[in-house]
Every structure is written in C-alpha cells, then in structure tokens.
Image (cartoon, rainbow, N blue to C red; front, side, top):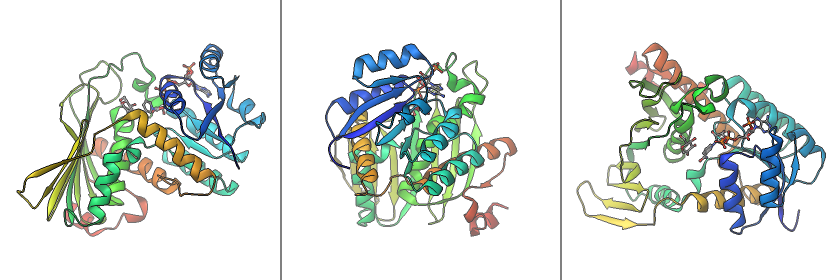
Length: 340
Ligand SMILES: NC(=O)C1=CN([C@@H]2O[C@H](COP(=O)(O)OP(=O)(O)OC[C@H]3O[C@@H](n4cnc5c(N)ncnc54)[C@H](OP(=O)(O)O)[C@@H]3O)[C@@H](O)[C@H]2O)C=CC1
Ligand SMILES: O=C1CO[C@H](CO)[C@@H](O)[C@@H]1O
C-alpha cells in the first residue's frame, strides 16, 4: 500500500466531525468514503469533506475504495458493522466501547482474527503526548514501583435526549461511556485488572442509566486504582491521571503535567496537557502504520476485549455490591482470597 491512507468512515455524527477536523490538519489519511443510515448526515459530511457518501456500511465496503474503516456509530451497532467489515477483509478502528456485551465483542475479535485483519478500538488517551511520556517515565523507573493510580473523568453533560441514556443503544451510562477510557488507561499503565468493585452514585439526571460511578480495581501487578466518572458532577481537577509509586509521583493534567521525585519532593512541570485533535490525528496516523504492517495496534484486540470484560464486571459489581473478577483468565488471583 503506498500513497494516501484511504479511510472510510461509518457513522457521520458528532465524533466523526472531530475526526474529520483532525484528519484535515495533515497526516497520512484521506477520508474517501462515508456511510450513514441517515442520508442527510452522510450527504452533509460528504459535502464538507469530499468523501463519497453511502447509505450503508455494506455499500461502502462493496465500493472497494477504502484501505480501512473507522466506525463511529452508537455502541449497540458496532458488532454487526465491524463483523461485516472485517469479513470483507477491511481493517477496522472502532470507537469505544468495542461493544455492549462481552459475547458480541468476542465475536468481533474472532471475526477479525479469522479474516486476518486488524481490529483496534479507538482509545485517544493512548495518543496524548503527556500520557505517553508518563508511561515512559514509569517504565524508566522514575517513580519506582507504581502503587496507586487515580483517574477522574467528571464533567456535566446533559444526556437526557441522547442515545447515551438508552441502555439498549449505549449498553449503560457513564460507566461504559467514560469508564471505557478509564479502564484502558489503567491497563495501559498498570497491565491486566484482576478484580473490580463499583458503586453508582445518586442519579442527578432523569435518565434510565447511571450518571455517576466510582470504581476501585486491583491489578495483576499488585497496584490499586480508583476511577471516578460522572456526567453530572464537575470536580474540576487539574489532573485526570495521577500515578503514585514507591519513589515518586506523576500527574497528567488537562493543561500540563508534572512529576515529583520522592514522596515529598518538589513537583517539576512537564508537557502541555491534553489536545484532543492532536490525539485523534496521531491515533489515525498510528492506525495507518498498523494497517501498513509498520506498527502494532494500540490497543490491540485483546486489550479492547479486556476493556469490555472489565466494564461488564463493574456492572455486575454495582448490581451485587461485591468485588467481581475482571479479566476472565485472571479470576483466581490472590486478591480474590482477600476479597472473600
Ligand atoms: N473518543 C471520544 O472522544 C468519543 C467517542 N464517542 C464514541 O463514538 C461513537 C459515536 O458517538 P457520537 O458521534 O456521539 O454519536 P452520534 O449519534 O452523534 O453519531 C452517530 C451516527 O451514526 C449513525 N448511525 C447509527 N446507526 C448506524 C448504522 N448502522 N450505520 C451507519 N450509521 C449509523 C447515526 O445516525 P442516526 O442519528 O440516524 O441514528 C449518527 O448519524 C460512540 O461509540 C461513542 O461512544 C463519542 C464521543 C466522544
Ligand atoms: O471522551 C469522551 C468525552 O465525554 C463523552 C461524553 O461523556 C464521551 O462519550 C467521550 O468518550
């Protein structure tokens, strides 16, 4: 494959517009096709981007003009669309969550494996410079052994008239929505998650799904983590990730990040914080490199599947009030003995 990376897009809604803006800023990808079941949305997107419009992902695939496809439809539609696309040999980058059930997510990763094509889940925070640098510093031993990770994704978003509040389409509320980012971040920094405990807070929006969730997780490496997600509370924290280790700490912030040597040293600033468009652009360039065989998927299909498994475990924890084993192959970790 040489020349521009010809990207098709399925689902011409809000986040598709963010991708189009990021791609138009440069990089290796060119948006060549767009499919949306809403003909007006596809036509408007096509007009603004120069992509060829289609009324279904199947028609888009049949046109054979794409090297790969980005799926940006609501979560309940991901499985059927992705399975169709990978079965036609098209590599796919699918927006989060990969799917709304573990069974359907497994079918997706299996279909990709059977057809020998790349399937990755969009996880923009893996493509934020300060997040990448934080992970590198931890790998270099800058904070010693990581002991604790805190993640906070809280902001006020009115979900009352959006598909996000309809569990049949979204799979749940803020836990599957923002929590999917959180779980992938935790796994990116600390590796597999063994057990989770989650509680849903008082519901502040008149919706049929949870709008505030606190989650605690243990990792296979022995670190612990807390995740706070809300569509209804704005904690207004400057940092969205904090990792504390035996020899220091790192905070990744929205406007800039910082590093502290030792348990009570001076904070040293680094980086410039979070830039969504830059992260999207970098994610697409990385996906192009993966499809060209020049790099490995981030996250890979197993990571994406694990994120679905952990979120499902967290929902079981909310329903039962118990610790729940998270990633199936890690169900018998020593921590479960403590939890019992
Ligand atoms: N990474 C990030 O920062 C973010 C990621 N997301 C994720 O992106 C995805 C899309 O979210 P968002 O852009 O907010 O959703 P939108 O509702 O704004 O857009 C989705 C579009 O897909 C269309 N659509 C629905 N079903 C199909 C189908 N089967 N084939 C083709 N098109 C279809 C919808 O049409 P219609 O309206 O007629 O149903 C709509 O035009 C979700 O998975 C979400 O979790 C969302 C926001 C931020
Ligand atoms: O990153 C994100 C920002 O918040 C949105 C609304 O909760 C999420 O859907 C999205 O994934």
